[in-house]
Length: 168
Ligand SMILES: [Zn+2]
Image (cartoon, rainbow, N blue to C red; front, side, top):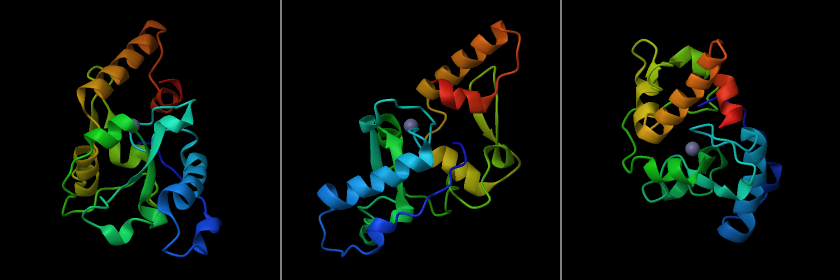
């Protein structure tokens, strides 16, 4: 989960609540979020050349938080797999988000090249919640990270997680 800077999405600021979510609101938000993530999934960092595979999704589930359905700050681009594996119950402690002001991957997490696991630095509860809520250590992601590191090891180089983001 790399740092993202949320751009302003000025077109939606003047929209009324009654405007159609799927046909008007969502495509505008999507364009803004594609800029924010550079065509990556906000959570697992997978890159999509074919950006229609990225879905606009609600960080806080809209079923539980209907008032946030059109709240730009609650919307992220996610791959289908992250959307599917995200936990159904929103945690009591707010998980850290990729566009939180003070967020940087290396401030909150580290990466184990020999297992593919992402671990929390220290005892940061918000970071723990994000790992768990977004299911960022599911087996498919661990395997992808592990495989990526193996390629780097064969080149006799230290893996660089930022490069990982741009390769998978
Ligand atoms: Zn993803």
